[in-house]
Image (cartoon, rainbow, N blue to C red; front, side, top):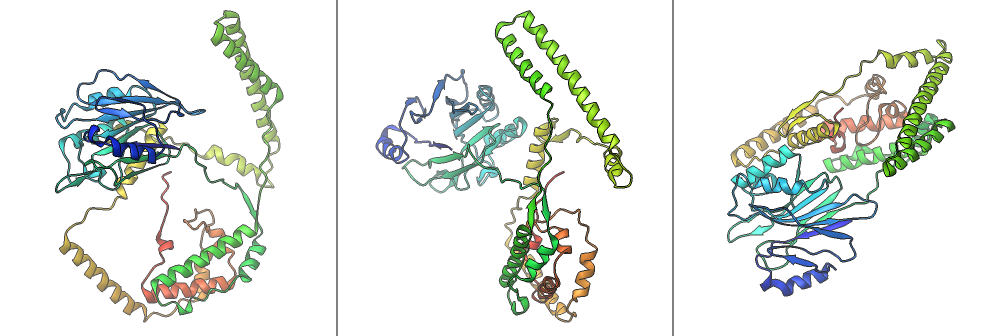
Length: 461
């Protein structure tokens, strides 16, 4: 874990005592202050100071942090004076970004923009926002203000991150006596990815029996939307637990690697390292010879495997169709995307562009018109009242109707956030179908659709 605290002290000499208390509280040890900026770093963290190039519009102090088995991280404490040019100060930021690939630039930018929680946009904020979009940078700011004036509170202390893809937390702390709050920025350098269990083999008879013997869920006495949501969650949990208890992982087929090919690869890698060290032409010829042998042997192994697959293809057991289907599909590559930050050509640039586009699309609109909000609320309430009165006159849904809908489901569709796919729904026992039928009736009478059933995870493909 990497924990960063940055703070505009607004004059450190008069606040040195309370700053020492804060530093001791955070268990940090001061190092080398430098002018109007400083970076204090624990002495047990391997690091070295980098002398920044000459800067005209900003002030900066740079330190490289060298963690074991990790790429170096460049931490920059930056200050953009309010008197700096509002249109070309980003030239200095661009110079700082050239120092290393993994960059964290944190400090006081004196830039206001609604994108990071300010009440208005200023010219410097517009400039840095446009610069971040063009350069593919991420602006990371806390959710609460960082500077408090006489009658104002804004966020002008934040961080700019370049190629630093780690989970993080950032908070503005109400401590110390400057008009700027200290900011804590924590990066989680070690994190675990949920383990994918792989393919599962499910005993569907055991799945049905497990659900039959599970605790009976009675939704007949549901009278509120909250109770309906809890009943739906219980039903989902029972279905998922029944699936887990009746499934076993399928062992993956072992991929055979030719021993001769492994031996040649090891010999080739050794020859490459020796050549890079001594630059001997003899080693270069040996490296080229080994590369040719590896390529020739790889083609031979691939041809033999393809021949064996052709010999085992049989029209009676369906293997011929599995073999032919990939050849019938036309592969399509995603073309270059034209975004606000320029042309996205690589996969990483396209993924970042799509992520930013989705984030923009799913950001709530800032609706602050009370008249409009009251009109919408009245319309929704009137619609729900009319819908409830109409739905009460409908006949209750029948289990046979629910079964007909389930039969028409296609099993190759992705599940929702609950993880219940269509094949699991097709194998539900009758008493679970009756429970779902009652839940549908309660949805119509209460005029409330369960929250879990209208929440989706959007994955671009």
